[in-house]
Every structure is written in C-alpha cells, then in structure tokens.
Image (tube, rainbow, N blue to C red; front, side, top):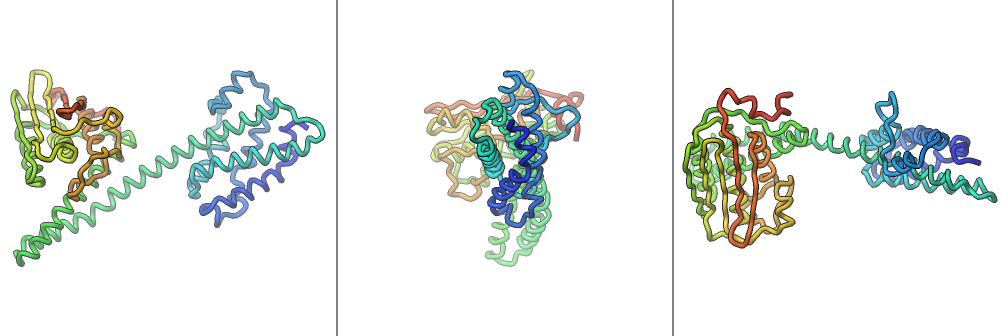
Length: 388
C-alpha cells in the first residue's frame, strides 16, 4: 500500500502513538487531556498525505527537505505552525517540539513497513515522507521561535514598566530619610538606598532600551540645542563621584554646540567610560577626547590594558555579552551586558557610527555624530520611531 493511503487509513493508530509520546513530555503535558496532546496532529498528517499524492519536481522536493516549500495559498498558518503556537502557549520547549516530529517519523514508518510485509515499501514514498516531515518540523520550529521571542519581549516590557512604581517609592522614602538628619547611621543607610535605587533605575532603563530595539522601535532620541561640552562634563563629574578611586581625564576642543539628545549622549558616554573602568588597567587613567569640526563631533574613550581578543572584539556590541576580564568587585560595576549595545543604538539613532580598536597599548572606542539643527530634528529620529 502506498504511504499516503496508509496514513489516511490508519490515522487513529498513528494518532494514538503520537498522543502516547506527547504525554511523556513533562512537565508541560502532565495535565493535558487527549485533545490537547493530539493537537493538530491529524491536520499535519493529512497535509503530509496530500503532499505525498501531489506530483513534485526534484527541485521542489529538495527545497521542501530544507524547509523552503512554497507558502500555501489563502492560508495564514499551516497546521504545523498552529501546532507550534499552541505548544508554545502550553509550555513546551523547542527540543520537545522536535522530539514529537522525530517520534512521528519513526512510528509512521514502522507501522507502514509492518503493513507492507512481505512486499518492499516504495522508496520514493519514503523519501517524500521524510521531506514532508522535515518541512513541517521547519515550519513548527520557526513559528515556535517567533512566539517565544514575542513572549520574551512582552515580559521584558511588563517587567520594566511594573518595577518602576515600587522603585520610585523606595527612592522617595530614602530621600525623605536622608533629609531627616536623624543621625549618621540613618543617613548612611539612606545614602545606600539612594545609590542602590539609582543603580536599579539604570538597569531598568537599559532593559527598556534593549526591549525597544528588539521590538524594532530603536532608541528614542529627542534632539535639542545643547552645549555638548557642558553636557558631557556633567556626566564625567558624576562618574568621578561614583568611582573616586579612578582617574578620568577630559579633553575638549572645537565647536561643540549643536542639536543632539543630551541625556542620551550622557548615557552613551557613561556606558563607554564604565566599560573602560571595568576592563582597563586600574592604575591608569581613562581618557575622554571630544572634538568638533564643521560636519561632525567626535568622542573617543580610551583606556590602557591588555588587548581585547579578536573574537571578543567582533561581538563586543552584541547584547547580553560581557568580556571575560570584567572587574565586578564593586556591585555598582555589575550590569546586564547591555552597555555597549545601547551605546551603539544611541549613536545609530543620531545617524552616527561607533567603532572600536584594541592593541597591546590601548583600547579605544570612537563615536562620530553628524551635526544637526532644529530643522533637522525629524531626520535624526530613526524611521522606526516615527511609527510609535
């Protein structure tokens, strides 16, 4: 019997084996009933049987075997995609999704070969079936990954939003305690709360910015006329207060008046300087050089220390990535590994670029940003942000 006919005739025994295997995928399947365990399995098998009965060229079969079959006409989702969506919502992981298809492949072929005896099974059916299962698996995995990514972004957004109110209450209470002048111990405790709250606020801001970029919204910038010399000098004064044991030098020259988002550029500089403090030699200064010419302003942050490994240098702006040599003895130096990623996002939101180089003498981050005036405010914004 041809495999397509066998699948349609013996659908129930095949589904029974699918259900039995799905029931072993703990913990997600522990409380699921038969209908949930069999979710869209019949539709997937029917689609495979229909595929087996459809004439196909060798090229079409090859594309299907690597998950690149043509999309169905008038179908928003295939059965495999809908199956992946529901499995994701039920708490299955991607390895369990793949295991379901592996078990399906094995059980269908075993049952079919037993039914074919003593005759030999059709080899073309065998090849076509494997290609169809591979296509369904590719559709499920791709759709599952998208759903997990969307859920993660939603969770990050909700987390960043919902934590702000209790954090603001903590900061307000700490500020109130500090203003009471109720003794040295109370003032010291209030100061620790204020510093920790500021650090938590910074982490939440990084998390929010990261989530915006993952959602395709980019880093939001609001350009205004500023004197960049004053803006960046204020940020470095704050960095010196936070890290009194480190020397931070600032050298500025040229015209630094222009139209940028001052708060964002403070954030960019702070992230670069913090990175230099964490990874640079502890007994050498961090040097910041800011220059302005007719077309651009340039910010360079340099630190001495061991050269960054080439492999690390290639992914240094990747999110959630931290170098092996980070010094985090001070809890204020810890982070999410988003600082350089966000710095790049801020530079790009200003239509600028950020680059890094490193050798045995120095590691240097260079930022170049174009000038703009109020008439160019809108052009500074990322096109993605205009759709908010």
